Image (tube, rainbow, N blue to C red; front, side, top):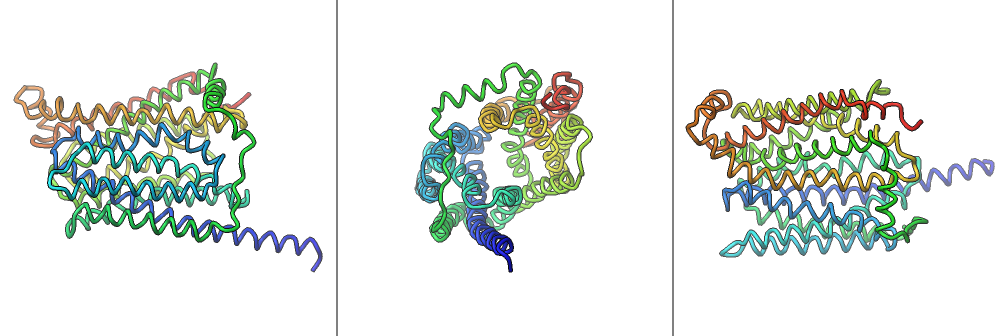
Length: 439
């Protein structure tokens, strides 16, 4: 064996060893994601049963979501400065402290919605600080040739809370309470922390050359990268509207189902719908190359919006599951189409900061949706569909009457808005200019 063969063999062994460590870390992330999904599902059911208010559910969702938006840039910078494995361990453990607050509150004689919000907020806060460290660990641990493969596996692990947890939680709630789901989630934190400690040896954090940049400077550089690019600005506006519409389905789908079905049915429906995203991703990944990413984005938005709207038409579990599956199946076309159009029109050296800024802006659409969905549902659409106006009666002849049909109408409106955005995008000249990439 010559020297070159020895070098190649050594490299192969090193890559296999690194991938083995990564797979162990990924297993921990998968376990943690499933646990988080159990808690998220259980708390929604609990708050709905406790208050009977969609607004209250939306408030809890905001508390669980907002910290991850606001602190994601902070977590990224900290991940560049400190040992990422230590950050992951501390993030897991302190996130568990937030769940302790929720658990104690739920088990008390007089549960407090405020304390539940505090608990999920604390948990989300430390999760936001931990996730960038986990993603950056891929760079620390793996060879560049394995980045894409690892990224795909991380997406699957992170989506386990959508693909697996709802069905499990729905079944468990028939034999136990939400407190048990939270305890299971807390146990997953200890398991994940133990796994991180077990594989920490020999892993070295690679600090970025620009890790010392101030937050303000990074934000300014991100803004500068987008300034003057009308097509990208238009895409940011479009995607913010899209995220806003999708935020409605996250909040309203559960009370819509629970108005005429139980937790098991809700869990199964949520899992079936989420698997649509997996199917859509497989279809798109099998394509050699899209002829037009604007067309892909437009079709994705239109299909997603139409099936979103159809979910509100009938109180039929099979139809809702089918429409939910199809809605999620179109979603990868939206995500990939938008990302490729933006990525192809930004210089590589500014993409990190630019995408960070774009993500921050667009994700705020969820926050506004969470606020408005509860208010519109409880104080506008549900009272309207419970009334006896001629317009409400006519609509009721199509989508039905009774509890939850106001929510159904709101879902129908949000879905049609999303489909309309898909048509508009296809006609926007500023978006079409992105098709050619950087000139």
